[in-house]
Image (cartoon, rainbow, N blue to C red; front, top):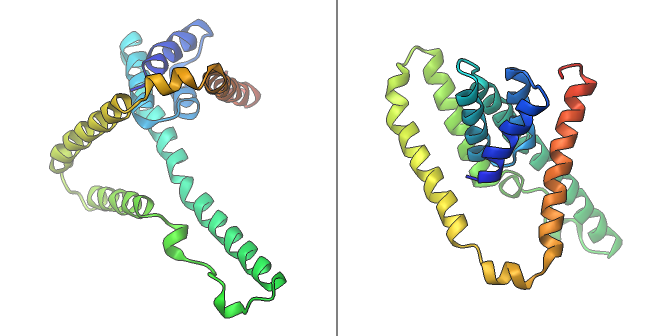
Amino acid sequence: INLPDALIFPTEGYVIGLSNDGFGLFAGTAVNDTSSVTAAAAVWDGMHPGANALDYATIVKLTRTLAIIPITFALALWVSARERKQAAENGADAASTSGFSLKRALPTFIVLFVCASLVATGASAVGVDPAVFAPLKTLSKFFIVVAMAAIGLSTDVVGLVKSGAKPIVLGAACWVAIACTSLAAQHMLGLW
């Protein structure tokens, strides 16, 4: 979990006067990874009992995640068309070009994500008790914690220091720009 996201975003949301739903939208759009979205929204809910920003933020973040599917598919089609055009310009036989590959267009993690979503949605639609999925939710939380710990433990602090301030400044600038864009969009839509 990105601790600055979990602490700074709820504080910022409070200072600028976001509503509970506004903060859910802010966390879901401005925070990068899902675990940090849930952490920031859970902190907000702790600051505002009954706020339920966690559900809203999670829905927004998962919608962003699902957007990977059409974007990946469109990019694969574009790359395939570009490769065919380059091959034709170089005089290569059309049959020898790589063409469109569904496997390249839809990586395994996207296919598995969609399958898991369909199973959970289908089970809910036919009346399967949500308690059936409770062990899977606990297991998924465990795997998220393990993944975040692995990312943190694999950080090469010496390499980061040696790379200088530019990457850190770039990351911070992107972080601020995304947060400001999220707030600007809410303001333009009249939500804040």
